[in-house]
Length: 211
Image 1 (cartoon, one colour):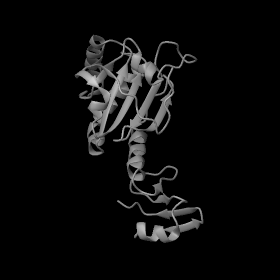
Image 2 (cartoon, helix red, strand yellow):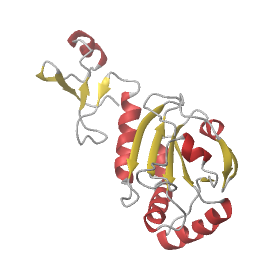
Image 3 (cartoon, rainbow, N blue to C red):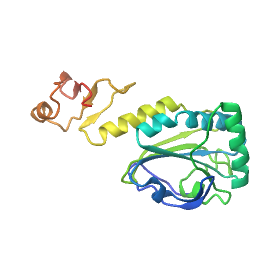
Image 4 (tube, one colour):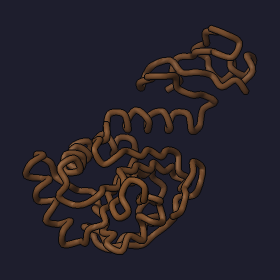
């Protein structure tokens, strides 16, 4: 099983999806991406998750994030499952659901954890930047559904801090104060952050969100 770490180039793959042939890197293009895995089709928690992801489509689009899901079941099963998702979750699934019946992608991304289940994928999330590098990895057990508000919060933080000398503190939400990196001198901070900053400790300086 491969191990993917933060900062790695997200491995490319080709597969079939509910939207046709799928080349992962080509599909990502120059956008951000979020790839989520599901243990199996017709599972209750995943049904609620994919419905929620579909209903958050405008939020992802506003952030230039493409989303895709993957399950180890075949394509014909995916199409039937989408009918259930749309019926029960009052949603329209417009993102690709990737078929991985041979488990090639699941193995490539380390989505199968033998100590948890030898055949089913865990509930993984990979957020990928436009340079194709993995910026976030989250792994949930099969029993716990994802929090999509948290995923949006993380994406906001990643997109903000990708190009700024900033980090975001605990429980940060879009629009709140940010932390200036310790590597930035006070003189540089004054130039970079014209809104000013508060020095709580020499290593802890807060500044209003630049954008």
